[in-house]
Length: 273
Image 1 (cartoon, rainbow, N blue to C red):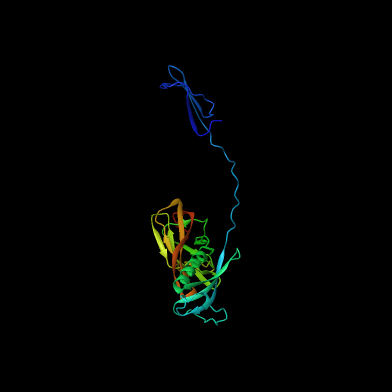
Image 2: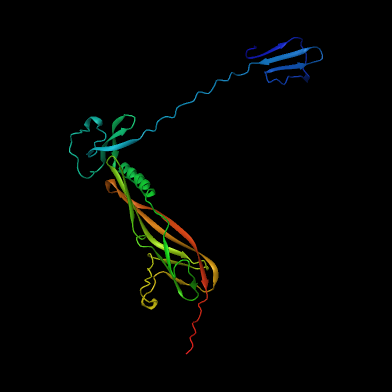
């Protein structure tokens, strides 16, 4: 085998007509008017790939060790584990014991701003875990029955749908609680109009006459239609609070459901005397 890139010139001359082989072995042959020019190059050796094992995921948690007034510059030697903890952070921050799943641990100083940032991250995770389902929408007349032109068509949520939900997470002594509250219900009527209701609507009571009750979220259809596509959306607002007195707002969440409503003309009742 020829090492490196070697060129053997048997007879000096200018190569003008290439005549390389097609075997992919790295050898090339050129022909000139007088003789042959032969060149060769070592093919790079292919080392079989060795599968690598995935590194185990390491998780860590913070456990509050003790609070201190500006003593973070003193060092870990001053972090006395026997010192009595106060109920709230004072001034600058606290020492924390950082413990990880791989067995490592060390004392670290976190000022109050870092604690609030950690709490906010926990709040965002908690907010995502709140089970906010699609709204269960009821109507009067009931869904599956015709709406009547010129008469109020009621929209309202099933019982228990309009209630706040919360989720709390913690790691060590850092904690946060996120809360989602329904704020408004929006109805796209399918007729080019929409209405916004600041509540779940009023449930229709079939035991009472229509004249004895009224809706807080209704619409009067103007034209008959075989199937109006109605979309009802409920928007939730989010807030959170956590370690160190931290807190704030979270992005709104909207859940929607769409269903058809058939609209017909109201038929006059004629009675013969």
